[in-house]
Image 1 (cartoon, rainbow, N blue to C red):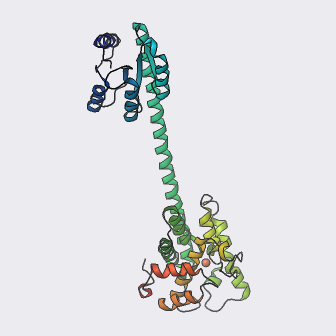
Image 2 (cartoon, rainbow, N blue to C red; image 1 turned 120 degrees about the horizontal axis):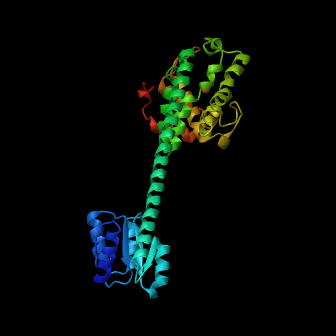
Image 3 (cartoon, rainbow, N blue to C red; image 1 turned 90 degrees about the vertical axis):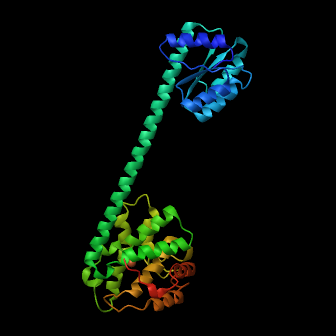
Amino acid sequence: MDDDAQVRQSLARVIEGHGLSTIEASSAPEALAILERQGEMPIVISDINMPEMDGVTFLREALHRYPDMAIVMLTGVAEVTTAVECLKLGALDYISKPFLVEEVRARVDKALEKRDLVLQNRFYQEHLESRVRELDRRNKQSLINGVQMLVHALEAKDAYTSGHSTRVSRYAVKTAVQLGFTAERLEHIRLGGELHDIGKIGTREDILNKPGPLTPDEFQHIKGHAALGERILAPFLAESPVVLRIVRSHHERLDGGGFPDGLAGAHIPTEARIVAVVDAFDAMTTNRAYRPSRTPADAALELRRCAVTHFDPDVVDAFSRAFPDPTLLPISI
Ligand SMILES: [Fe+2]
């Protein structure tokens, strides 16, 4: 690209003699129009001083649209500072006028080589990124499969847990939405809800399914499921500490009277407070070995009665906003 037809044509001859085809443009707007029509070119050689749009403006414009295009500036002796500025802006090289045939060939070859390298790098980078994404997706999928397997293992052992984990998970997610949770935080809640009781895999079946009241020792044994669940899951969920906290802390009470750590108030993660509320609701509204279920409306009242002592009142509010009509509960899964 040069407004001087003679320079343009002799340059084109040199380049064609070197085995490449050329398109000539007499101004920057014309060159941009050609690029628009034909798509990116491997290399553009651009004059600096041109009447309509100078080479520097062209360089910026062209690189903005085609970041991988090799642009070599054609500079008069007096324009060396401008040429250096062009290199800073992303031009690959410059050729000084009057040019030598050998120099043009060498600079064109070098510019094309550099562009190839840029393209190769880009390819590897993109390829790598998509590979990492794919691996990440597969990892997540196998984690989910593993989680389902654990939940099924627990449900096979404890008939009363059947469906409990899934319901808790769904109640918890809808409640969390009311509290403004999105994206990854909702995913933590979903997973934490599914897994909160997983430690019961380690609870003795005769205690788990005992029809009468529990002795203090038996109750102590059952309480162990929260911390045990966290220990079982820790190797899988090292990158999701919030999920582990849900599992460990879903039996904490707001007044500090819960287990396993006796945490109070804000020391209990919000996620665990959410699961605590919906877990209690589902436990109350489904039959257990030791007692029949309450009606959902009754259970909702009970949650409200125990707000502040047991439960976070904001979470109880959010739960009733998420499920305004308790008669529609429990949800079927
Ligand atoms: Fe539990």
